[in-house]
Amino acid sequence: MSRKKSDRFALSRALSNVLESGKPLYETIKGQWNEIMFEKQQPIVLELGCGKGEYTVGLAQVFPEKNFIGIDIKGDRIAVGAKFANENSLSNVAFLRTKIHQLLDFFEKDEISEIWITFPDPQPLKSGIKRRLTNPRFLELYKEILQNDGLLHLKTDSELLFDYTLEVLPAFGVEELAYTKDLYNSELNVRHYGIKTRFEQIFTEKGYNINYLSAKFKHIS
Image (cartoon, rainbow, N blue to C red; front, side):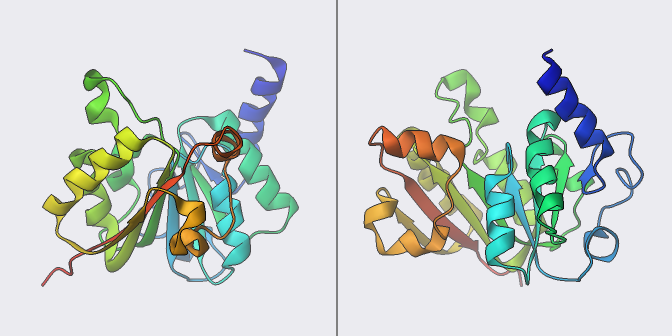
């Protein structure tokens, strides 16, 4: 492991706005994010597979009236976003180091208002379908923790993943769906607030179209 990477892991362990295994609250924070982790009780938004947290901190700056949690298993990446949040006094930002399939260990039913999935690994091989972050096993988790009017957002350069997502979503009772396969030339462009992840910057510079969708699941009676 490089010295730089090792330093970032150490930083992740030290920062108070990062929850990871071994830290106080890691096993007890479920259902108490607004009461314990944030200064204000506000709607909670997740960025899944957040990497360095570009979207987490970007959205937090646009929407100070919401709280944001970036989730990733890579502590060295999370440390970048967490450090930025601290240095810029973003008290509405936190990070959680865990795997996505463990979401129900950390969030109660209806605790989340929105979920963003930004440029996840498309898992193009058939053997990787179950690891796609819009696979039904993950969608079940999102629907459980999202409030009735909660939104799921997806941004990806992968047409394969995007088409797959459009195919599987209807089975989960989608009430509203908006999507485009060319975000920057679409009226939906305003929905991403001009925030770009590192991968998005690379893809757009190479001329790739960006796919985007937002989905609202049907209200539970």
